[in-house]
Length: 240
Figure 1 (cartoon, rainbow, N blue to C red):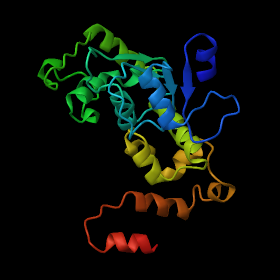
Figure 2: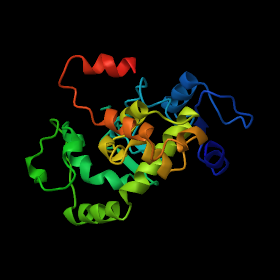
Figure 3: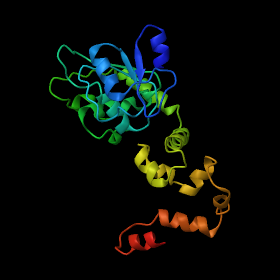
Figure 4: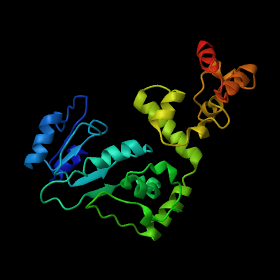
């Protein structure tokens, strides 16, 4: 992307942890300094700028990579939400479909936990935003967003999130990594058992395939459903 933009008259740099033979990658600090001086107009990054970077004058955020994580989405959006002199607004360009979570954005921007709001049943007028901020939503557009989200079945989103994490980790994600790495309800991954979910996405090893329909699968399902009401249960499970 940095090469394409630069070749079409918009000076850009990519910032990442690896080297780049194309010459369009820059050091993190040098890239930020060049952006602040106006020497480059765009910095492309994946996760390296999610946290720990402060560029108050940044007035445009462009999404080119889908994320199901509201935490990551807020971190990325927040890069452009700092106040600066002569900065009046932030432009957000979404090219990859974050509209699927748009119905949660009103609560997200108000500082509330958006996962509580799966629909727009709560009136937007009840939400309070930081002093000096004005946020306007078109109800008809948000209704359309909800319809579009419904067209993307949960099973597909679960599969997409699983393989997104696999790509990021370079290996099959564990249950705890799925729990912490996505905002999809984790109970959905365990509805028929973690083993069955892995089977549904063709991610079982040959040995694990042999556990299906056996006492091993039954044991795993039982441990997944344990209610930790007694103090001895957790250390016992950890020992197993």
